[in-house]
Length: 152
Image (tube, rainbow, N blue to C red; front, side, top):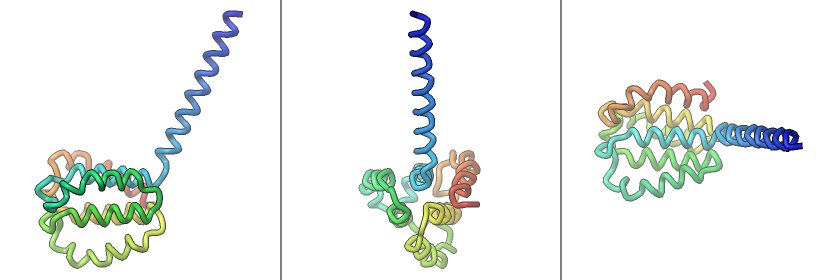
C-alpha cells in the first residue's frame, strides 16, 4: 500500500513537472515576448553615455512597456522609444538616411518578426563605442536568436 502511494505521488510529480516545463516552453516561444526580451538585452548593452539625457528617467517605464507588450504594434512602439532614447552619437552616420524607412517599417509591423528585423537593423547601425565591452562576446548569439525570430 505504501509503495502504491509513493508510486502515485512520484507519477503526479513527474506529470506536474512535464506540465510546468511545457507551459514554460510555450511562454518562451511567444514571439512578441521573445523579441521583447531581445530588445531588453540590447538596451542593457548600451552605455549610459550613448543614451539621451532623458532616457534614465524614462527607462523604467520603457522596461515595463516592453514586458507588458502583447502585440507587435506595442512592441514596435517600444522599439521606437528605444531608438529615440539613443543619442545620434550612438549610431552610424548612415542611420540618418535609413531612419525614415526604419520608422515606417515599425509602423507597418504585422508580426513580431518585423519588429525583430527592425531591432536588428538598429543594432547593426549602433557604433561599437556605444555598447559595453561584453557586447562583443554576446552579440553573435543575440543576432542569431533575433534572426531566428525575424524568420531568417
